[in-house]
Image 1 (cartoon, rainbow, N blue to C red):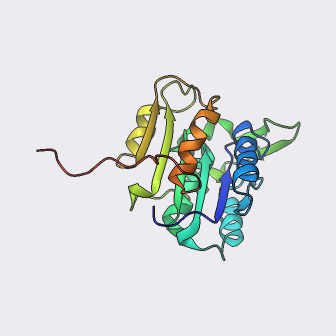
Image 2 (cartoon, one colour; image 1 turned 180 degrees about the horizontal axis):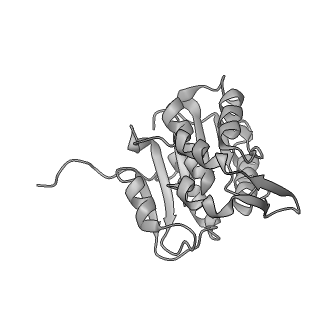
Amino acid sequence: MSHAVTHLLYLHGFRSSPQSAKARLTAAWMQQHRPEVHWWCPQLPPSPREAMQWLRDGVADWPAARSAVIGSSLGGFYATALAERLGWRAVLLNPAVDPARDLQKYIGETTAWHSDERFFFRAEFIAELRAIAPPTLTRPDRYFAIIAKGDEVLSWVEMSGRYRGAAVKLLEGGDHALSDFDTHLPEAMAFLGLTSGTAPTAPDPRPRR
């Protein structure tokens, strides 16, 4: 990558928050190692349409070549949509591929993981998710996906297929929460040019002779 990131956005998953373990770990890493980088980890509203509009407004003046996003699960879906719209780099952590399908069972009142807060996931949010979904990845080399075969929520086969051509770290075990995320964080930061070290790269698309 030619430019180090100066603006970094972190997007949590469904029912999650900036208090998630991965978000807090990333925030602590940024504070310790790259405090000069503009960091934003917002609490996302339940409505996908409102979430995307709020995010686009919030990053409207960020420089595309030096901005990046890290997204977990549903946040990975949003991160992909943002990266496609804005030309950013993206790190994806067990990213949701088809949340319009997967979240239908949560329509109604539900709870957040990190508080007692209750919120409504409305039926119309499914159509909002479909409207956001980017059809293809225009530049797979801008993406680095960390995918756990042990994910108990999402299909690692489906995730790997969605990000074919991107840099992918496929974990033999693991879980949906990526409980060992601290061991993978340095590679994510290297991909974004925020630390020295070997950055993961996309596979060579040229046929082998």
